Image 1 (cartoon, rainbow, N blue to C red):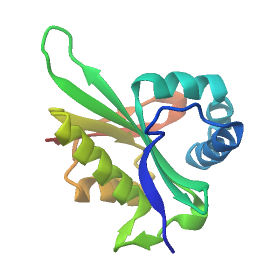
Image 2: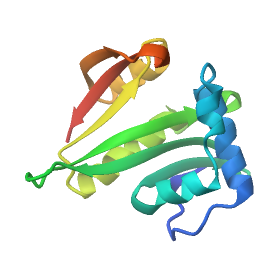
Image 3: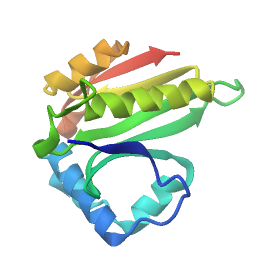
Length: 165
């Protein structure tokens, strides 16, 4: 099974309604207990997200089956660029599937790390619910270290990870 994995869209074209519908379906899986968050994703939201951020996708037969956002940030006064990784999700039908011995999420994360190093980011951060055991293991296996744990009220608990580059 072969996947196309990379930053999307490289030419910054507008996403089609069909592509956004596929991504909303992934968000529904990510936010199983918070469907209202997935329902808030729409065409206008994606236009805004793509303006200054980077989206990586894995596609199989033109279907979007895995994704993740990298959002560059810069600390005021200090010219230190870092990034936030958000919404890493793989469709349930494609989890555990491998390409070159790696999961789709792992490949996407490695591409984000490569991009961050190339653009001289100081570090990357991401959060993950403690209940997402496989995701937490993956992040730690890639070198992300836990730096905080927080209770987010109705949204539940989260772990904050950082990877120095």
